[in-house]
Length: 319
View 1: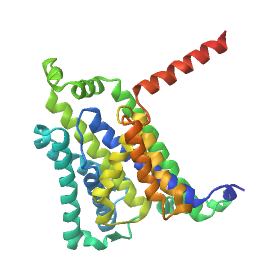
View 2: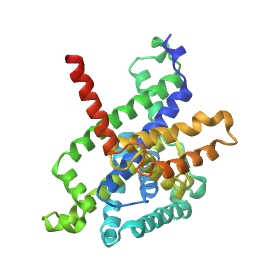
View 3: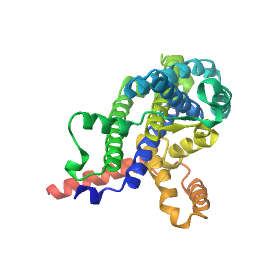
View 4: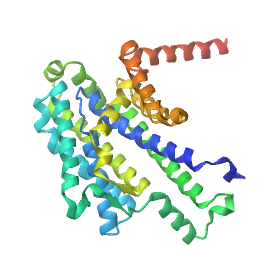
C-alpha cells in the first residue's frame, strides 16, 4: 500500500528543505546585484506574522494571507532598500542585520497583537485545510491507502515542490533577461554599469525588494506549515543560516543556493544518531569548506565543466 511507503517525518523534512530553498533564493537575488543583505530573517518574520494575523483574526483564506505577507515584506523591503543604497559590503550587511534584530524586538514587545515571546498558535495549517477540503468534496485519504497525517504532509510537500519549480523557472528566465544582465553588470562594476546607462537605483531596489518578497513568502508558508510561530524563529541565527545556504552552495549561481539549502537542512537530520556532536560536525564542515573552497560547492566553472562533459558524452553516443 502507498501508506507503507510514506513516512510523515521524511515528508516534513522535505517541506523544511523546500522552504529553506526559497530563503536561499531570496539571498541569491540580492547577492546577484552585489548587495549583501542579512535582513532575510526580519522579512521572513514580517511575512509570517502578517499572514498569521490575517488568517487568525479575519478568517481570510491561507492563499490570501500568504500573498499579503509577501507583499507587505516587499513594501518594507523597498522602504529599507532605498535609504540603504549608500551602503555597500559589510556596512549594508550590518545595517540589514540590525533591521532584522529590530523586527524581532518589535515582535516581542508588541504583545497586544503578536502575543510577545509566547508567539502565535492556532494558525491555519495548509495540510489541515486541504484535508478538510478533500473530505468536504467526498474524497477520503483512506481510499488511496493513506492515513490523515500522511495525506497532510504529502500535500504540503507537493505544493511546496510546485512553488519551488515555478520560482526557479522564473529566476532562470530573469537571469537571461535585461533585468538579470543589469544585476550582473552592477555586481561586476557599479560605476561601469552606471556609465553604460543602467539605472543603478532602480535595479538595486528591485533586487532588494525581490529578496524581501521571497523571504516574506517563505515566512508565510512556514507559519502555515508549522501552525505556530514566535519571534525566536526569526532571530539573527536564522539570518546566518540563510546566508550559509548561499555561501556554502555557491552564491554565483542559482543552483548553489538550492544545493546549499538542501544540504545544510539535511545535515543536522542525518547526524541525529550522534546528536551530541552533530552541530560540531556541522561547524567543521563549514570551516573546511571556507578553507578549501571559499567560492562554494557549485560555481560557474563547475557548471561549465559539467555542461561540456554532458555535450561530449552526448556527441560520443551519437558517433
